[in-house]
Image (cartoon, rainbow, N blue to C red; front, top):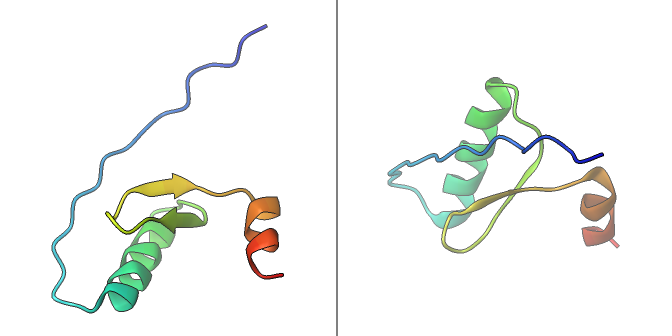
Length: 59
């Protein structure tokens, strides 16, 4: 049995902040809307990250 397609979202933002502060601002805004943990690459593309993957980053 196949899984239903995962919904995708496109988000665009222009922020006058240093990159780390901009990433944190976007994560905070998304969390307020109910989105979970995200990884954001250097181009600003967001990718869902599982708890297992996140734990691996801290080791």
